[in-house]
Each structure stands twice: as structure tokens, then as C-alpha cells.
Length: 171
Image (cartoon, rainbow, N blue to C red):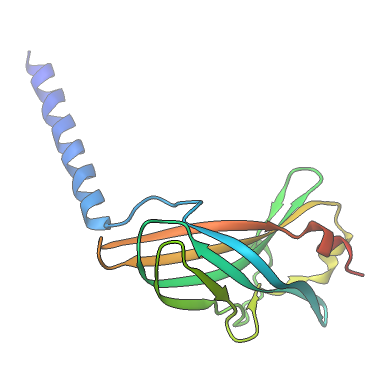
């Protein structure tokens, strides 16, 4: 009986701690479909010395039912090798100040907005020697970091765009 009481007491403490942590966080789990790229105006790689940088201008739709006070959109490029390994921005982070992102205010449900950042969203610099690798797929990942003041939440949503053909066309 004493072991059962102790176990119940420990479980109650753990559940209470988990509950407190989720209340303090005030955020929802990552969402994959709150925003969707709906139009591509410009999409391509540019050569900068020994590196490439991916640039995007287009439009995205707020697919949620929320009005977001602020949406900060950034862009990353991910390369999948033929052997299944994934190269992310962490692997090629140049340390340079690139890809500042686009900020939109008061983005309403179903509203389409231009994603631009004064000349396009830019990825970080990707080393040109990555062209020597056997690449299976290259994806642009758009991160939408949102703040909803009405519901007191912050979310991160993402959408992807397959840019393998553009990568393969590079010389």
C-alpha cells in the first residue's frame, strides 16, 4: 500500500510539472500547414565567389483561422545526398549576416501576402564544392515564425519548395 501511495504521489508531481511547463510555454507545437507558398515570382541560385545563395520572391497564404500580429519568414536550403545523408544550414553556416527574413504585420486568415524582404529572401551561402556531391534532392524550407496576441501563442510553421532542378542546372 505504501509503494502505491508513493508511486501515485510521484506521478502527481510529474504531471503537475508537465502541466506547469506547458502553461508557461504559451505556444503550440510546430505546424506544417499554417502558411503555404502560393506563387513564385523569382526562384534561383546566384554565384558568389566560392558559394551559391538561393533567392526567392513570391507569395504565401495564411491558411489558419488566426490573425497573426507578426509573421517573420526566413529561408533555408537543405540538400539530400544519394546515400540519404542530409546537409542543412548548420553544416554550411557561413557566419555571415545573410537571409534576414521578411516581416509581415496583421496577417489575416486566407490573406495572400508578398514574401520579398526588399529583393527577395536569401539563404545562407552554400559552398560551391557541394556541387561535386551526388545530390538526390534540394529543398527550400520557409519558416514562418508567428505571434498571435489574441490567443497569446507563438508558432513556427513551415512550407517547402523542391528546387532540385535549379540546383542541378548550376555549373
